[in-house]
Amino acid sequence: MKYTKQEILAACNKMSQNTLMETLNIEFTEIGDDFLVARMPVTPRVHQPDGVLHGGASVALAESVGSAGAYFFLNSEEVMIRGIEIAANHVKSVRDGYVYANASIIHKGRTTQLWQIKITNNDGALVSLVKLTTLTLPKK
Image (cartoon, rainbow, N blue to C red; front, side, top):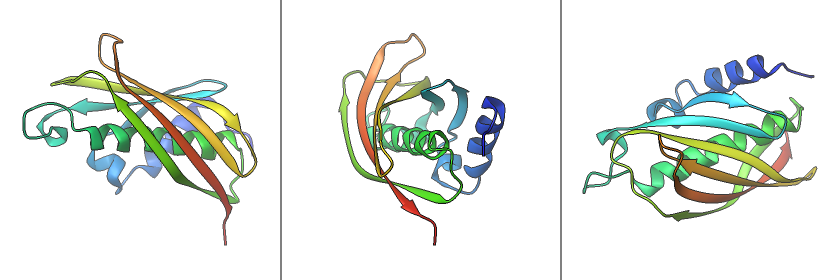
């Protein structure tokens, strides 16, 4: 089934209800032909003890947007997506505002997909660079 860009964003935000994505206030904001963007507010809820964004929250944001992208770009309601490997390099700290995760597909295979997710701050500066590999499984 083919979805419009607005339908995909609405579906991503709806499927986030009652999940970690809702807990972290992740909001899907933009989609293109080969990318998906989500944002997350940086507040004390996602800080590590010294008051900056926790790397684990960044990785959760990255996996959320990459996995959602894989699901919708494969254009099939008959599959499940699972992250099977994730690696992150954190290069800048953030204390407040928003971070934006832009997931772009590098390899779109039937079984595995490779994503690059760039997390940036309000000024567009790189905060984290993440590589995510996803696996496509048939729904049972």
